[in-house]
Amino acid sequence: MSTYYRPLVQHGPTRPAGAFPLAGQSLWFTHVEVFRHNAAPEVAVASDVPKAMLDRLTSTRPAVSGLDMNTPHIMGILNATPDSFSDGGVHNSVAAARASAADMVSHGATILDIGGESTRPGAKFVPENEEIARTCPLIDAIREETGVLISIDTRKASVAKAACKAGAGLVNDVSGFTFDPELAPFCAAQRAPVCVMHMQGDPATMQDNPQYGNVLLDVYDFLETQIALLEGLGLSRDLIVVDPGIGFGKTEDHNLTLLRNLSLFHGLGCPILLGVSRKGFIGSIGQESDKTARAPGSIAVALAGLSQGVQIIRAHDVAETSQALRLWAAVR
Image (tube, rainbow, N blue to C red; front, side, top):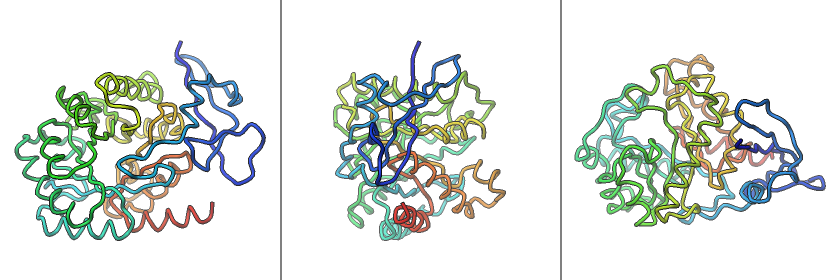
């Protein structure tokens, strides 16, 4: 029976004997919550965790494309789509995208995530040539304008190839490398850093009654399997970021379960990306129907993620998120 270990994360300069650092950060833990399929969770002392798993939970994450993973990062969202759920049509011109990119970087974004295919619930498939036409001119322009790491948000190998040639330095696949069988081998051959996200179904169908045996452990198992796939192709774990895929084939209860237990995913030995910005559950719980007015709720959840050691926050509202992060860090 598989066993899973979630660090019960704490912070503060005074640590008790037997405390372990979380992923090389200033956060630490002395105990873990132990999960097994079809069994009640238990709490155990961290020193009882098997050495190989304890090493994964505690080891410092290597830099990703030069970005220190001991410091939280903000990934600014820049969608070159007419139909994305909250910013569709905003960045359809190179000039508008460059202006938005420069603004996000000036307010603290260290990664810009550019997408040409909406992945909102119910979104339709976009042909590769159209996705390339939407994203590559923006990547080329923004790379020259900002010099920051650019992520291409795509599930298609041909788009990733064109985007990397234009200057993208990270491939962010919402399908977790299950959609296009050519994408993982391409990334491995290029040694391109990747983000592996979990999604049940595809954007067109993912919110049609999603179901899990145990959403937390099912998502963990999927990510572990996909990491093994990438490693088998030659892409080392230090080039892999993981994303539990909040809102992608999940109900509100599924999302909340994952958010309460995010520190479990440190057991994968990779940096964790959290994307919650403006999503539906932010609106329903926060009682805000206007997607563009969900920065407060999005930031609240992002800070909760940082408290569990998440390394990258994906956000629409970069200036507001950056301000909140600075205050959060100063207080802690």
